[in-house]
Image (cartoon, rainbow, N blue to C red):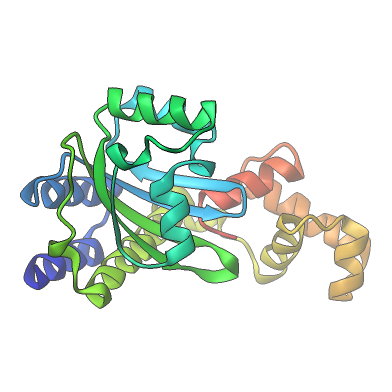
Length: 234
């Protein structure tokens, strides 16, 4: 197992696009008896995912905000250790929303799996899941917790680097002042509030935000924040 995890880590660190990472994760999943993988990053109510689940299931999962009731996510975040799970153990849970989630997951071939959670910065959590349509998942292959954490972090940082390098061209990179004002905007600060905490004149703060909007082709500051988050800039 260690050698295979090492290969997964090496693959992530050498990958130059998302296609290579997705292909490597698919091959890894299949070699250990799984059919799907999902990388997930949660930050409060915000959710990012990179996975090989059916597109229809992705739309249902995100649209219904199932990460709030998904035991693979909630249990992994609560325990912060590698867990195995199976939908057959979820039957006792009572809400209609949960029952609907369970039925739809099984219908889309998500019945059991292994989830590896890792704490990120500013309260975020990253997790990597390998899922199967079978009734039971074997966690014994994932007993080396340290190697599993390294694999999740390698994938996380490589995806961020790829996003910054391939989506944001050099001419569109933000200056330090633009990035600082954008960071405060991402935290919900208005122009005047950003001016107060940074000591920059409000008109200058607005200038930096306008400049950042032009570089990232954003029409508004909320859109600027959304694009920057998608690109891993904040």
